[in-house]
Image (cartoon, rainbow, N blue to C red):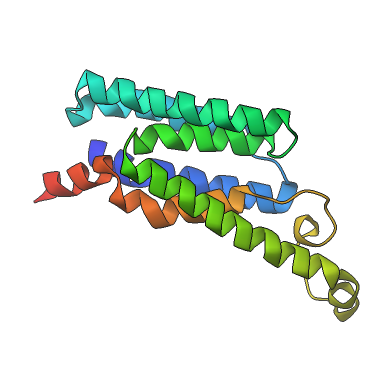
Length: 170
């Protein structure tokens, strides 16, 4: 049961957040809350040492403060900041967190460029009747939760938590 929670919680929450961000330009508060609370419940059952647990919380705090600064500068949305913070706790304070954040940066940048390109052609796309969500064509913001989710899905398998769960299966 613990292994299933490790394998499914973060990926499902990230996918749900991405879909919400795509269609409504919001990430519901319950998603980061579920991520954070489920980590707090699952982590003790993994045999995780308390120091590692504390470092995971510290990783989330560090990401939160960085994201809060970006939010205060009106560079990042609040939902994106909360989602990144809650995801960080599942990565811990180690190289996998850096890989995740770098992937978010790269994929988010590519996503942003792609959306800006779509928006530059929005008249032609709408005239052709191609069904594309308004968040991609006419919104002023970028649904960055999509980039966060893709980066998370690509990097989560390299986290110590997932590697330990895989090792416990054999």
